[in-house]
Length: 119
Image (cartoon, rainbow, N blue to C red):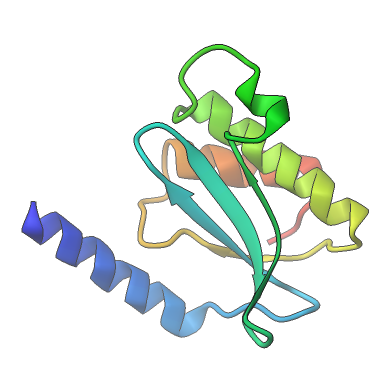
C-alpha cells in the first residue's frame, strides 16, 4: 500500500511540474474517492478555484446508484463544462492528478469535451 501511495504522489508531482492554469486557460483538476468524483477549475496565477462540480451536487445527488463510477464521472464532466461555458471559459488544461487515464477519469474528460470544453 505504501508503494502505491508513493507512486501516485510522484506521478502527481511530475504532472504538476508541467501543468499550470491561467485565467484564460484554467486547470481542470480531478479527484476521485471510492464513493464520489470531484472536478474543479483552478487559476494557479491567483491561487483560486473558479468553479467546481462533483457527484455531491443537488442535481446528481438525487439520482440513485453509486456515485463513484464511470456514468457519474461523465455527468460531472458535462455539468462542469456547462458551468464553464456559461462563465465564458472554453479552453482548459487537464490535470489527472496522478491517476491513470482510464475509467472514471477518462469518462470525466470525455464528458467535459462533450459539454464544450477544449483541451
